[in-house]
Amino acid sequence: MQNSKHYSDPYDGVTLEVTYTRPDGTSLPFWGFYDGGTTWRFRMMCDRLGTWSYSARFSDGTSGGSGSFECLNSSADGRFSDYLPNPLWFGRSGSPPELVRSFHVGDRFFASNWDDPQNPNDGNKRTAFLNWAQQQGYNTLSVASHYLARDDEGRADGWTLPDLWNGTTQRPQAAAFQQAEVILDDLMSRGMSVYSFAGFFGKDSDAPTNGAEQEEYIRYTLARLAPYSNVLLNVGGPEPTLSMTKDQVDALGDMISELDVFRHPLSAHNKIGNDKFINESWATYVTLQGPKTTDLSV
Image (cartoon, rainbow, N blue to C red):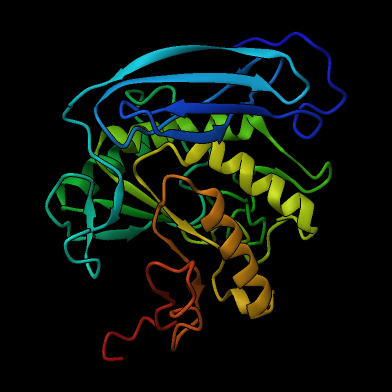
């Protein structure tokens, strides 16, 4: 939708609140996001079939409109989640349990100067890799610099990566999300899930440290990415307690869990050893860093 009203800070000065009404009459409140210029968007991932309605309104009183849409059966994959009959397994909504076969692709996967995602047939290395990965039976990718670019030598240095949070302005970057979403759309069309190796608050990144800005970053990221069915959420890592206290990680985990109305699997990327967060109410699966060696006998 378009909103031509001038805001000094459209990322923070106003919010687009949306209420969705399910076919059974129950409601689901969520929010939209500013996407640059005069454009605002809101997204949804339905949890039941039938006719839905929505009503959108800006926090300054500007009307965002209302309408309805149909949620129909399709061949698209359902939400990647725990398998409800046995939550020790992963699964998809309305489908049998799913064996996760994951491949770690490092920091440059989302880089626009590795390959242009808009031109997948022009000798595109990313497309060639994804075709190969699918042929090998991989259905999940672990991506290092996914939300936040880690501009360290030997990592993201030299790659033009989407950096979802601007560490200088302390605001989200709509254009960076747009760059990443082109590739997320391709992964979703392939039935491939994506795990953010460094998560929301990756080590050696410019993630916000102020509480209010952390919440703004989480809310904006969820508004754009939580309606994707193929994402696993990660508070931070690798080894999040090297840069934050356990209490800080728990507070962020609680915030993400509370704000994610679509209930994606959520974890923290732990260092080698035991999971410090395994008994926390926000944690739904375990991620442990593997041995840092190429010795296959270990």
